[in-house]
Structures are given as C-alpha cells and as structure tokens.
Amino acid sequence: MKKISLIVPCFNEEDTVEAFYHKAIEVWQKLDQYEMEIVYVDDGSKDRTLQKIEMLHEKDHRVKCTSFSRNFGKEAAIFAGLHHVTGDAAVVVDVDLQHPLEKIPEMASLWEQGYEVVEGVKEDRGTEKRIHKGFANLFYSWISKLAGLDMKNSSDFKLLDRKVIEALKAFREKTPFFRALSFWVGFKSIAVSYTVEERSAGATKWSTKALVKYAFRNLISFTYAPLYMIAVLGVLVILFGVVLGVDALVTYLNGTAQGGYPTLLFVILLSTGAIIFSLGIMSIYIAKIYEEIKGRPQYIVGKMID
Image (cartoon, rainbow, N blue to C red; front, side):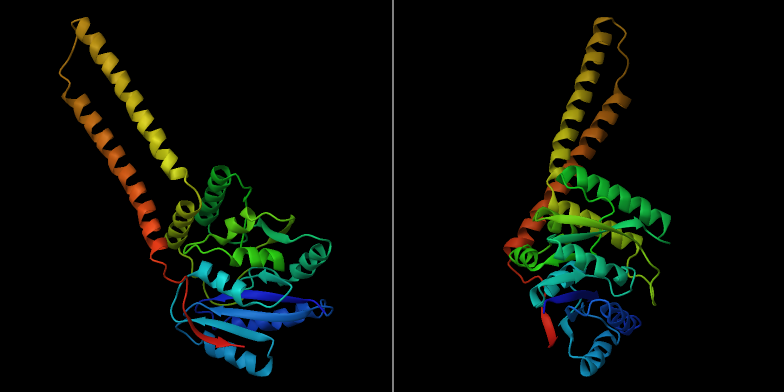
C-alpha cells in the first residue's frame, strides 16, 4: 500500500494542531487506499504546540514530529519535513487549515495519473488584507518575470512525488525558497486551484513587515536580478549626466549659461544615492555568500517523535 505523508510546519499553533489532526483523519476516510503519516515540524514554538503533538502521538503513532531547538523559519521547517517523511509522496500543508485538506484526494488522483508535482494555486486569497494581497501579487509577478517561472498565486500547498522530494533534499542552500525551487527542479506538474480558508483558530504569524522581509530575502536568494538592476541604474545615471552635460555645453556656447549650483547639487545627490543603493545591494549578496560558506546547518533538531 502506498503512503502519503503530510508535512505540517508549526510555530506557536497550540490552538490548531488538534483541529488539523481531526480534519486530516476525516479526509483520509476518502483515501483509505493509502497509508497516512502526519509529520509536524515544530519550529521552536514557545507555547504548548509540542505537548499537544506528543499527546496526539500517544494515541496515534502515525503522528510524528521534528522539533527544532529554536525558531529557524518556515522554509527550514518545510525542508526538515522533506528529510524526515517516509511516504511515496508528501503534501506540504499549513496547520491552520487555510489550505483545504479536501483537495488532497484530487491531488492524489492526479499523482496516480503520473504527475510528480501537484501545485496548489490560489484562486481566491480569502479575507487576506488588501495590502497583503497587493504586495503578494506584485512580488510573484516580479519573481516570475525575473526567474522565468510562472509563480502567479503560488503557495506552499503542493503534493510532491518521492523523486521530487529526493531532488529537493539534495540542496545544500542555507536560505532556500521552497516555492520557487519546487518549480525549478522541473518534473511533470499540474495545478489545482483552491480558495484560502479562514484560520481554524489563533492569529496569523505573518505581519506586513515579516512578509516584506520574507519577499526580499527570497528575491535575493533566488535571482541575480537586483545586481542587473544596479547596472541599469548606472546606465540611467550616466545617460542623465550626458544630457545635463550637453545642455550645459549648449547654454555655454550660446552665452546663456546660468549659475549651476542647484543642478550640481542635484547631480551629486542623485549619483551618491545611486552609489549607496548599489553598494547596499552588493553588500546583501556578499552577506549571503558569507552565510553560505560558514556551513552552519539550516536547522538544529531538539527532539524527534517517531
């Protein structure tokens, strides 16, 4: 009998882990041709998330957990799940039930048809704040163009065949971008649309500031586009300087030259700003290189529940 594993990242989700478990059991009644495994990944929670998972494991040994020594972030949690699942396929899904588990039977059916990546695509982002929706659409539009991947309305909700899992496990990046890498590895894929549901309990852990930081980090880690933007910015500054130079020469030859202090100040501020911006972008990439070559682990496991 084939096994499908669920990879469930958790951070301070004591109010949702039990609800998720019961919903998963309900859905699995329609998937009784498969064995089930629920792999919670506790991302250094400070509440009773781990204790709740331990209680679930005591009554159902299909429930497992990898618990981090501290908070390492959702990307690390997903990759920890990929390293510890034993199923023939795995579904990455949020514990708050905003990813509808009812879609898993459809995903499994497509997997049986030969698709190795079944991508959950957001048809409706639900009651998400307008600023979040706008920023998410802008970010995925940018990264799709810059990386050459169609990631519009992408999400972490997806089914991966064992071959894809093994390919992703081979990555040694310290700051991986799971949503993009699951596209990048290729394999036969298909999309399944879904509507983002309301959280089953608790409050979201994603503030606007956290989303901006997440987006910028992943843009830097997955593409070289910001470096190319520096080159474009340099060309624009040069062209602007040429235009001003030609204008200054023409007015001088015509005898109509005026005092150039405001223009000079503007040019200095513009070029200085461009230089500082460029140095900032390059410094971030250098910091990323430094982070990679230190060779620290992506995460540290504090406890395993098998």
